[in-house]
Length: 479
Ligand code: SAM
Image (tube, rainbow, N blue to C red):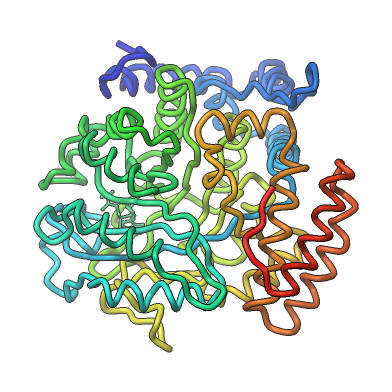
């Protein structure tokens, strides 16, 4: 039976509740009055000096998803953009994935790292190699990484992951430093999550892949990941281990998107109900071609339009949650998604184990094909051409503003006096240290345009001084 406060996966992602939700959504998909009232409810409002957005429940949001009326859908897109601007402004945070190891004992049928695949060489970075990758990433300008690894207790035990994190944080090279390491590794124990927290990770990310239990069991035919309940309850263990920034996601294409959407929102509601804070981020990966994987065998692929609508509705339903899109998606799809709700993107990613220090993109150990293959400098210039401020900011995490403390910054609208200048300072660092001449010109012009938009005068004048000091060679200021 459905119970968002339960710690049992079968109760907080209750299958029958999802089926009932979909039936309710179908019954109301032409109910214009209800849909208009939901859009009104979800609109951002200032109440007693606080920017408030109620979000929508999985039931309410599912009605919007089922609606096929073009005019109403257009209103949904507009509202998503309004919420995005209200909470996240025009900043986009950048990161890169770093694949540590493709050893894996699982059987995930959509992932080329599955253990039966004998086509791909198995590889695991040693600490010297980690160092070379990180220096290559720092030389591009990256400050945030997402660590990725297959699940293999022999080759990739927690001690190996912890050692890599330690190595990464210790590398100081020219002006570069990785300031935040997020981790995307298989579901693990409370004790291991505690160790990850102690190692100083930012967000713990784990994709659910699918919330449909029966499909999940078939898609993960063997290995530890076969255990649906253990996987689905991972975020509760992570929070018990002290990690309060967790990142959710489903792999769109595996199951019916309407089912996944309801499940994803139920998961967010569950985290809020039990831990008092929802997910820090939601990722929206879509299945891609990979070594022995043909995405067309999964017949639940979604069009770019449905994908955009899902992004918009996640933005409307969980307004305080960051949203991530990776280089699985093309430049065009990413551009649209940025307006609708995405707040973080990866740039210049390589999904091979290692490979950042090689001039050509290696394909032999790649996890999936990368659609957006531009350099980081090109991505930065492109963001600025669209009016977005590229940000390498990691201030909240380093100042201990995680979990609900970050949310309160969001709610009081202080983002404009805090995140905005921090973003501009990290952009300035990028421009001085790594950018091409052309990108630098664009960036300096953008910073000059953005300074006057900071409401607090003291912050504004402090920022101008910090920017001068960055130009003079100092680094790592933050508000
Ligand atoms: N091994 C960890 C686990 O099992 O959760 C996480 C790391 S895995 C390298 C990261 C994610 O890549 C998976 O959670 C899955 O959603 C995604 N992925 C796997 N195969 C993919 C494919 N063919 N196309 C797109 N994404 C894929």
